[in-house]
Length: 566
Image 1 (cartoon, rainbow, N blue to C red):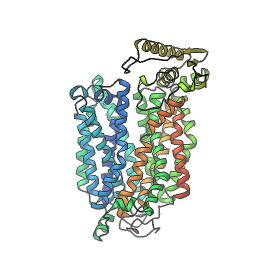
Image 2: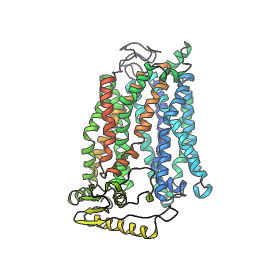
Image 3: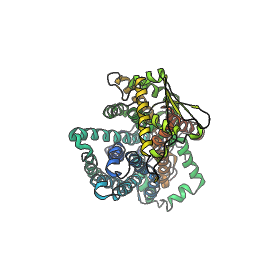
Image 4: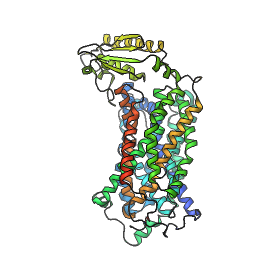
């Protein structure tokens, strides 16, 4: 990277130059397309439970939901590969046409999901086609972000890249917001039919957004930086080799991943996705209320993406991102405990007055956090006890018992003995007697929890909605701190000839893997350790690593001349 503060560049030189009509068009076109792609991507996650019943009906309900989530995760897993494929094309043939292709792939794939016959109609072909469509969506999204961020940054005047690219940073949140609102409206309009056919409407509506986005993007010009580089014959013939085969650039890619995007990603997903999961699955807030609260927090918090983007042009990008990671590390535990206090105070009172203790032989206890485990995989008395409590989202402590001891669950003053279950000879289900005893044990545990004051759902009359919203807004503001400036910073870290490729890979490994897998990993930690807050350790540790690496080894980029190292 080359530092050249306040120099003239083709994208505009003066920091106080007003935004031109063309620059405004670039931002709107790039942002609109990216909002649309995130909208498509999040529809699936928001409707995972319904999709499980529609396309994985050949499995038991628990396994169906798990496979639906794994299909959702497949979209995240392939994003870095999309970054490589489309990043290479973007550095070789241009930014404009590459992310025109990505939006077409994303839009058509989403529309087809709305038309795809269910498992009841075409059998196992339905989930296979669905997973293939999810992977196409992930590949397209892997190529979209790098193209949009690079395209906008290369049009921006020097000294305004943070401001201009911050509009791109609002798109993921706006896409999530749009998907939540469209789903809520469709639920309201179709009523009970939503789970039968109404869920398809949000997917089918995407074709309208696709047409608008493609029309706008076709009218856009290529980025001036790429045009200049192409006219001078300096485009890269092998962007993958230059990006990842040369240590000088590969080192920056690794630092960008560990010192920036990994921490940014976990803060982003914790502040939006995990917060929603925590409200609905752990605190038992009804889905409509939780979605409206998250949507409200997004409306209030979204302008801060632009605020921190503009601020990064003035004071620098690095320390705003590091401050967001630091605040997340220091406050996640108190903030999520405050969510419990204000969203479900009855649960907080029960945890304080009637602690749950599992006494068990450690050798009988399996790993509870497996994302592909089935009910019948947990047959020991310890596993059945812990599985029952995990499904109730209850916090508990484990006390070690002598070898061979049958596990017990103590809720307040009441102690309940668990059981060891047996399978039928074929091994695909519990023996009828074991199944009956497991059901009786679960019923007894549920009764004891109810008697001890553990609620089955959050009471709206007791919920302090205003304070829940305030906490969610704080979490979203952390998201805006780490995410608002990062597009400009990634663009500024790499030379024009390999910028699309180089910045896309660390971004999508960070957000696709570190961030996208956060709900699964955090849920596994909670299930394994028996504490509803234990899943927060994952984002806290990753954000801490980014804080240390970023503070020590990432240098500020706001005064870099992105044209100096073509």
